Image 1 (tube, one colour):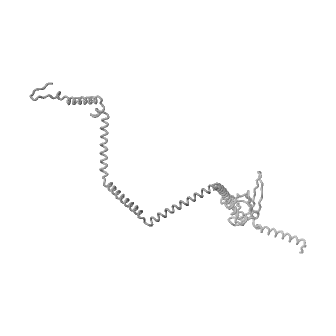
Image 2 (cartoon, rainbow, N blue to C red):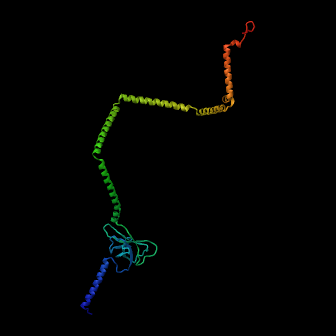
Image 3 (cartoon, one colour):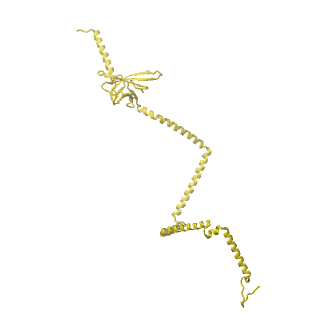
Length: 316
């Protein structure tokens, strides 16, 4: 059976097209002999993710990004729906997430399925939760940003400090600081001279210094002897007898206070003498009369004493 040239050319063209499609799908990483499940995830920013980027589970490539579809919401915001294909041999929970990540510094963005166990199994056409993980450079940039702001704040403060220092370090202040340093150098020199004199004095064992040290030693020994004597005296005191004496003295003072209190209240002879004004006046009057009698007896003894040698009374 003979085929025409046109038929042969058509068959060759069809085979070439099929081979091209197979090669193209192979180059994109798609398998022509398995049926893949399709899943979707929604992102506000895909961070450089491209079609045909690999999709992995626990580090194993199980699919690829099929399409990135931009969409506009009613409020005008743009977001992206990422369509991925995953080998149907892999089943996982619908609670799992599709995450965009960067496997290395020099590699492009990829996607992976972060497995979550339990719950309903994800089916073909389901929309999964989306997530995004910063790459190494992105993490560094995010960390460097706050540090850069702090560094700028520190530099601004340093600049302000330098400006204030320039204002303080004017000509007059610089001259005053120079004089201060000069005086400080003189003071240090004087201290060095004094220290040298003391070192020389101690080094040559000056007799006057030695005498002062000897006198101080004798004084300290005398003080020690005195303290020892007082210590022995304190040890020799019988504290029990001293306490008993103090207690007896306290009782005596209480009794004396009672007597004084009784006198103040008019009790007893002394109390009545202190409090009874009439008795006091009578005693005072009697004392006055007695003094007058004694004075009169001294002045006129014959008035009170009469005697006669012959036994006959003499009359004035």
